[in-house]
Amino acid sequence: MSDEEKLALLRPLHDEVGRLEAEAQRERQHATELQQQLQQLELDDNEDSDDVEFTQSEVMRQVETYDQLLASCAIASTQIQALQANQQIGHITTDDYSKATVGMPASVVGKVRQQVIGSVSTTKHSEAKVGIF
Image 1 (cartoon, rainbow, N blue to C red):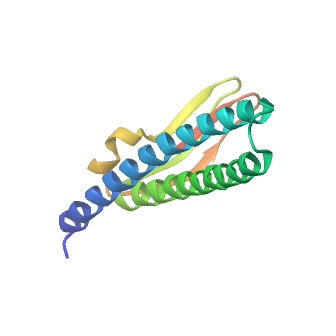
Image 2: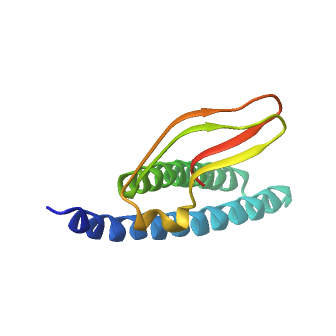
């Protein structure tokens, strides 16, 4: 399989992970809003506290599940980006009080297959961002 064919397979996968991540963020936001509504119901004396507590625990479980899904999406997205990159950078040294950004923006990852970064050194009060940013 050629590199182009491999990249062609990775792009839809990356897009699907992005879609899944966006959906999980929307659902997590909805669950958070539901949690707030349930907290308000809990303050209302007319509501059955057992039902409210059970529903709150279920919503809390959903929020935790969405948080885990979002973390997994972030990891998968980073791993897919790393598979698509092909770039070699090395021997970078920052001077005192300087900043360096070494690598590539996420927007160009689909155009590069591999990224190898080595030997990045910072000096006093310097800052370096390394990798995909």
